[in-house]
Amino acid sequence: MTGTDLLTPTKRRSRRSVTLIVGCVLAGLIALLAAVSLFWLPYDADDTSGGRLAGPGDGHLLGTDKLGRDLFTQVMTGSRIAVEAGLGSVLIAAAVGITLGVLAAYAQGWIDDTLSAFLDILIAFPTLLLAMLIVAARSATLGSAVLAIGLAQSAVVARLVRILVKRVLAQDYITAARTSGTSWPRTVLSHVLPNIWPTLVVNLALQFGLAVLAEAGLSYLGLGAPPPNASWGRMLQEAQATFTTAPAGALAPGILLVLLVIGVNLIADGLRDTLDPATRRRRA
Image (tube, rainbow, N blue to C red; front, side, top):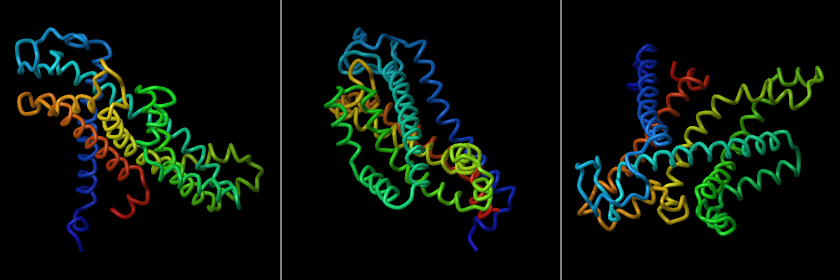
């Protein structure tokens, strides 16, 4: 018997609640920072009047970068880009993934095999290479990065949806619905999706964190939002040469990136324990 097994149900629920609350606080603070950046910034994004590599203070909370731009302004802008990238990628992944997953689950024979093979190929296709292809066709923008990340993640979502939907379709109430003449679109909306959404929501929350990391990586390589947009990944790339003299330029975006991903992962864990009936039964 493990230590977790010895916990009372009340203590287990309390621990799960704390996990969810801490995750919401971490992610919520950064989301709030992103929301504020839509209406107010300390300085213009291209304002270089602060002096090169100035330390914190004198009107600059975190100091300035090598071009004299305010770091706190860049951090706020980066938080908005990170949230936009995460939400945009998850929306694309959900729209494409749920559609393909449901179709694959309902398909039979060679159609199911073809869709499954396509999903496996898409999962194996590197996100970075896909981003390079999209950037080559469109240009290096935040939209291109979000599209690439969303398409790459859609295969993961689709495979999960296919498994979940097939499991639901094997239930007796689905057979009864089909026998009564219920159309398959109505069956999906009324019976299938409501039964898979708890697991799906948890997976999409995890995909959000992965999308934020992927966008930072693409921006680090110059494939994300172009200047003067201050993505956290671009900030890390620009600050690596001056880390010893002005560490705030790398520490601020790096810490916020880690906190956002940890917060979203904690939210996913809390949602899994709260929404997933199978998990609740195992831990009850």
